[in-house]
Image 1 (cartoon, rainbow, N blue to C red):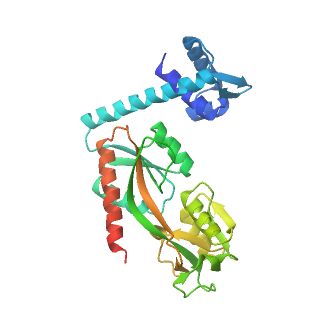
Image 2 (cartoon, rainbow, N blue to C red):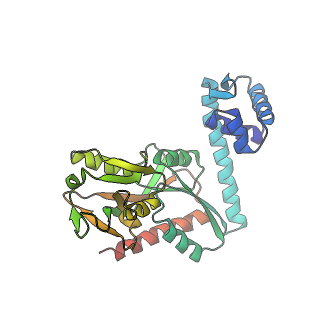
Image 3 (cartoon, rainbow, N blue to C red):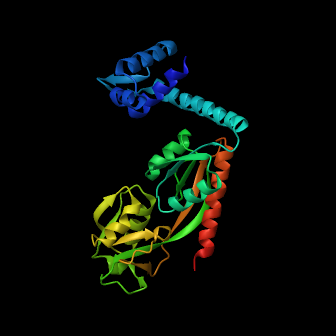
Length: 295
């Protein structure tokens, strides 16, 4: 059994399509198919049920997938540990987030203090972030708790109030607070379902007796302020994303405390490299400073 066979198997198992898996691996479909076939011959059992180019893991495949993921995870941990021994102060941080509102400040501080450590960031839904954490493909996830599943460590780093953002000239412009019930006839801009902020906001609105109507639903929380400013709709925006735009007015939510906690997550059994340790310290320090600045 070869390492390449395991890597190809994982790609096909996750995508369940030969063409898409070959594209993601930058190999030909025939090469990928032959490698999977050799792996099945080595194991003595089929791993997939086939229907054209689409494949679905069978019982053998599902059992083997867990072992293969664990094997590759341990090998990656070993690579990181040896990297720490041979090149301290360097490395790459893999980060997944569900909101990018605090990212510019965090990454600016991190790069200022540790210019030789690189980072790669992915914006994901909560479900996608959890999957990458459990597969060991990212060092940290920055999201709002709770996250489903066992085996994850969680550190709350900040509690950000969720504000209502309205464009200048809106009927609520000039007020400092608003009740959720007053917003039932408004049109909203927001992120798609699956983001923790969206789920939290929708639940609060339902408790206030209405289902929010969205004129825009997207994957980029940072875009919402621009849409509010343009008068497309009003939006719920975490305090961490508040900016100084002159054409936006922010109101606190009355009657209930609408707060989004921000937490740093990592897999419990993951090797925490030196680069990852210093990144975690920067994140904690950044939000501690933000908390002190808050009124």
